[in-house]
Image (cartoon, rainbow, N blue to C red; front, side, top):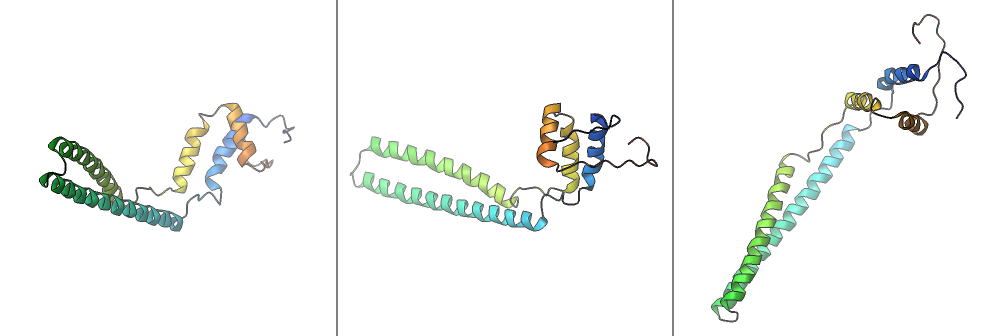
Length: 159
């Protein structure tokens, strides 16, 4: 990386130019609405699959409880064993119902992933640029900016 030989080009001027230029970057649209919709659809499908799996587990617990009750009624197991197994199944059932409630809320919300706009990205960049240290700013520039071209325009004031 070659430094700039122009004495009038200071780091604050370059930073200001970068912040002014950033909103006009043509390929800044980091998310495409089609991609977002595909991601939302995938999240909905995954959530629905999880809901179905948990509902199935709940049904199996209900079946298991009936089976254990029949064992107790037929005196195949004692009351203490029945009570311990029922207590464990009740705890499992409560956990599954809690997970189902969370998943159902997420599923009803449509995936929960917000739409990210170019304005959001620009605003976030501006806010966070100021929080970076000089070495972090340098690292960002080296990693994401291919080159900086300065044009000497005598008709433009300031820079």
